[in-house]
Image (cartoon, rainbow, N blue to C red; front, side, top):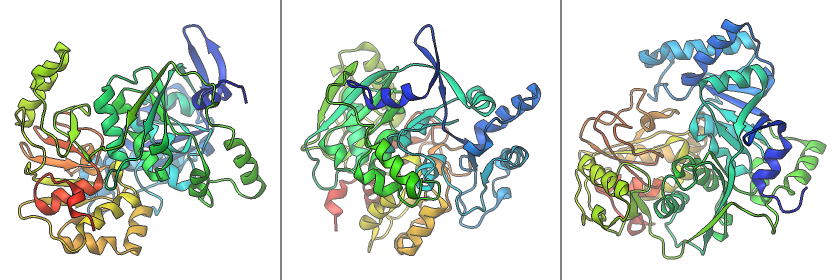
Length: 469
């Protein structure tokens, strides 16, 4: 590989089909994952223009955004999503695309099933009609979120014409203490650098704290690259990555596995690689994080107090913070710990994996959900659900008073039946806390799975470290 190259540059440059003026590149897409809400119009466009799907064997489809998460369900369980789900099933069948419908044991959130099936691999490019495709960067894969017209373009050509991102590195120095999770690391970084820090960049996450994360934690960090403003995020693959991938359904095998390993070991950024922007955050002493406002940079440690917007030097930031406090019905100086919650949501492409449910179950075990709190647990995939049930995690949650539901995007996106009522306060493990994100006039706080479970059993935002077992 070329000396003085970043991980991103190595993978991107290996996929360039043609370069154009204005730093635009046509790149080849190795894998394409479809979900029901952004694929329907793409297939309509193909039909209108008489174009086939050029590489159906490189595409897979799943139902996730608009599905019901009721424990017993089928496509009719959410009538509002029935048309889109049936369209996806029909379009996939017509074009020879693997389709994981609501009944399929491989069904789940697009960004969960890609890694767990081995469809996302180090050194590949993967596109999906959803912004959080960056998740797969946790494996050293370039995950590119696209819109409907670009979904159609990939189906028709297996390429994308994109502006070449600049490079950025965030180093997470030091070792976080017990009870500080991957979600806390990325929230702290967004809080420090801001929601536009990564704009027009591909961000590489590095440093001791990142290297110490299990692979599923790395997926969580890369998932929220979008909330940093970046197009995508990546982490260099290592032995932990390779162990995670080995034996998965679509992973290489035999001699192909050995050849892949040899290639993957060359992907890390070289010591002399130059980043357009290079910053660091100290993780020592970091507390579990929780958002107080309506963007992800509105975040503090659970032991902190809400800042006064007047202390911000930037006028726009002051105005946004003041508006966020009004929407969230909070005041400067309010303590985060002890703030009452109405709903707790554990799940999403950010924190719906097995290790996330295990972290929440450790807090929930032997406790009860507080009176008047609704707490739901939504596995990120059918496989996660099976593995959790094999461990008895479903019984831990059910005995504590949580709802144990079926895989899907659920309350993260509120285009299904899982919605936060107006004025209610939800602590969620998802990635977005925008106004109305979880339902009209809903109020969302973001935190880790352990923090969510702690809020469920106490009825208020609580430092999960105090309930550690």
